[in-house]
Image (tube, rainbow, N blue to C red; front, top):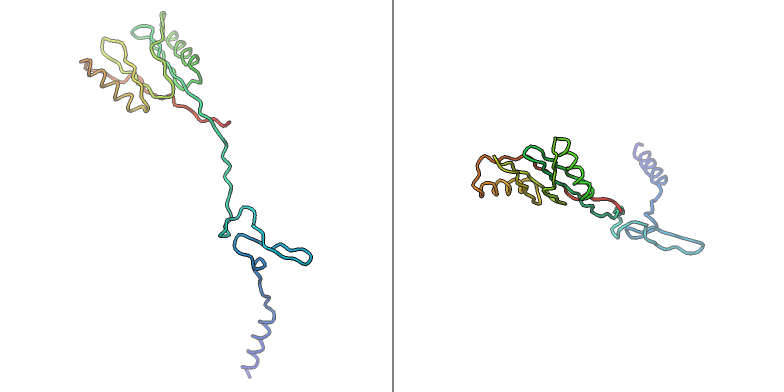
Amino acid sequence: MRRPLSSLVVILALMCIRIAHAEGGCPPGQHSQSGQGWQTCVPIPGANSDGSISRAITHIPSTWSPMWGAIVSGGKDQIGISSEKPSESSAIAAAMDECISRGGANCKLSHVYANQCMAVIGRPGAAAVPSDASNEQTAISDGMSKCAADGISGCWVFYSGCSLPIEVPK
């Protein structure tokens, strides 16, 4: 008796199942579109041919803005340094202000640079030697080498830093 009852349950279950149609038989990346008396497949907006959806990455165009730095000297202990300034004149003005605030009465531009790194190497009994390069470590290394090539011992890194260009959206 159990056998006919289980067969009846299976038949009833099969009758209740609807058959699923996948997008009207369209290939991956397309969906069906139909109207009165017609049906076709059209691409899914933003889909690739394999059916995956591509996400458009919006890239905002940009430009690079130079950054400036300057070194101003007003004597043995009076020095002014600026970095990461948007213009040559603002870099010089900031360094000049720092030199004057340190007591420099006769501050003069020693070095100005843009889009690079700078190291000021202190030398005993002599003026500091600026050294610029594409990265801070190279600027330091080059400055120390210049000092050693001059036959001076006891040189030290007085300052190192970078004024590299910054990306700005258009």
